[in-house]
Image (cartoon, rainbow, N blue to C red):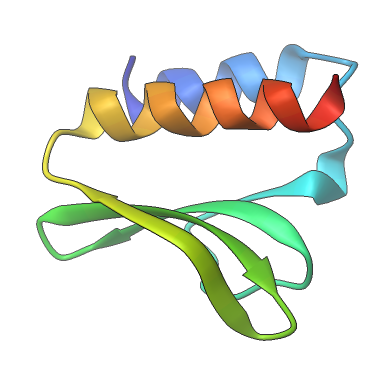
Length: 76
């Protein structure tokens, strides 16, 4: 899955609240984030202006799949 694919899939899933995630916006308020920093991808939960549960990836598809799986777990 590419970052572009992730954006499309996420936006089409009506069960996922729009404010629960963020694409390439660093430290939004209370959201699961995926952020490209140079050659790496960061996936983390932004909470009170801090990154929690930060995981970094060198491979775009791994970061996107990890992000989407965690996003789905959040809405269960």
